[in-house]
Image (cartoon, rainbow, N blue to C red; front, side, top):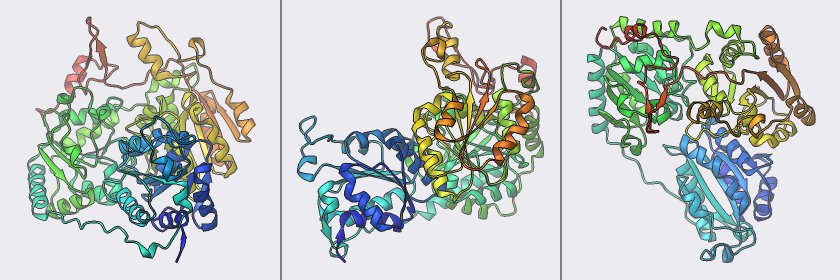
Length: 594
């Protein structure tokens, strides 16, 4: 059946699982957007900035494990998506951005720095930050390339794909049945190699006295959340989770310990540094997790690293003793079968990890004495206690990123979508993607007074679509993280971190009124519980502003110090600031005792 190329693209993406699309209309995609309108099945959300559309598609893909899609026009619009696309690339989100382009005769003239009206040769840029990028510059390529793009985006490791479609190709008429489609080469796993590696891991676990599991986002991407839980429970192994995997296991699970990292927590970092075996499944072990002194990470542990991406097994940071190139689900299925009936017997080690969890909470009693607003760690713990199993969260970047990861106590079935590797301030539009996919459920977007400004315009997208996004805005009078960094390393000189040094922020109550959004302000500890209940009960969009101390420390953290020659050195991974008394710190170094 003959159709426009644009009609084929929209329908093929819809058939591949993209029930929603996020877009900003434009001249170079007018046929594509018309096809979307004519199609009538793929629901669309119109954003106000292309970065926001890309972020929404990214978060949609992460939340659903289906294909996220954004449609944008050419030139500056395409370039505006770059931050969102890179975020999806770093954190492995299955999504496709379809960008318009000038007609083929103009788009293929790339020698001058610019040729077409508003045009730019964007393809080489996006080739560097996607799994695959292509221009559909001939009708006979369309079916093959679109099918190939879908396959690549959804194949492990998943990730973003970039399609450019010139305006004349969009409008061209063709019959897809006249052209060949894409047939992926069959993947034949080497079962013998994987079985041998699983045997090595099983033997390492049987002989280990102090093992731990580190679970990352790859577990969810492989559909192995239940398998990971069942394996940990059956084998009695303490569990740590990465930030991208923070919702894999609830806080109250008897084997859950915490999140390791430079802004992690003491229980997790003590576990890492005292262990003799790490089994890492689906976590890329980024610098924020392992610290800057790579050799100090898990120094007593044999390291098993399981990842579907071979590049992650060859990084010059944490070198695996047993590198396993495998999908998390496949690996866990085989290891569980191999270890049927096995249960780790060193209960003293398990008890020790749980003792650290009890004795070193992030929310400390002295935070109740705060005079300037509410300590954000105490707020986050109280906020988490009010939330229910299965609730949805979108996490922006800034101090809120660290506070949420450190102090929020997960409940079973909750989803926490975050901007991990790139840590993009202004990730709030991701909440639009989650809201579109979640059929009217509340989405709590945790952000800051600084981060919110970077995509403030998308409040109108939320209002227009009646998305029940509840923005929990931590107001610390600017950029708390940079305030501390400048204060610590620039001899107290500050610039661009608060109204006093050059950057100011609007009255959020007035912003809420302008957009027609419900507004709640929490500035005193005495009103915290009641106002959190109020936020839960309100329907539709909400801005909840939480006043937090402008000089509050973000702790615990792995500390760095500046030497006389200006170089930076990191303190030991488990010797987190504020430093414990030396005798207490030494007492927690149990690697030679258990």
